[in-house]
Every structure is written in C-alpha cells, then in structure tokens.
Length: 123
Image (cartoon, rainbow, N blue to C red; front, side, top):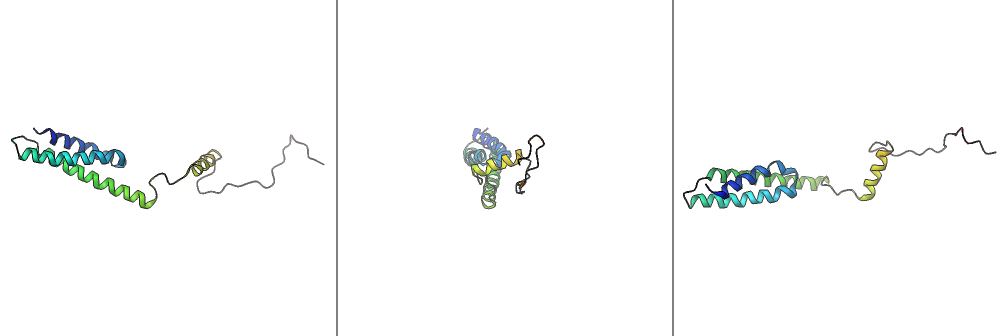
C-alpha cells in the first residue's frame, strides 16, 4: 500500500470540514493534492495498492481548495471577511449592547432630565 495515497486521503478528509477556516483548510487541501499526485505516480510505477485512496484524496483536495477559495472571494466581495470594523466601532457596539440599544438604533439623549425627588429644586 502506498503511504502517500493514504496521507492524501486523510488530508482530503480533514480538509473538507475545515473549509470555513481557510488558514487551516488551504495547507491541508494543497497537501492532499500534492500527496495524491505523488501517490498516483507511486502506485503506477510499482506493485503497490492504494490508487483509489490517492484519487479520493485528489478529489477531496481539489473540492476543498475550490470551495475555500470561493468562500474567501465571497467574503472579500461582500465585506463580511472580518476585520471590517475598527476598534472604535467594536467598542461602540459593546457599549450599546450594555445600554440595551439594539443594532441599527440611534441612542437617544434625554433633553430634560426627570426630576429627582431626593434633590430639592433650585430657586
């Protein structure tokens, strides 16, 4: 059995669920593709088995690579790729959430504060 074929299949299997994490998925997908091509060549040039595993690793590696790249392009185009908010905007959202202000609502300011019964009126 070709070890490269087995490694290709394992990397391909692991790369599929990690499509949403491009920084983890891309190296695994590329590794599956490289090991898959080397595994196919290894099986063809010797009497080793594992051609199916190498092809499975290649297929899953290419699928994972294409989907991760498509997801990355979609995130970049739509502006939802993270990092689109600066520190000030994040702090404003945290403060608004603590004050009970829903996203999209403008905070309201009371012009005339309600009278406090503990403080006597100034004359």
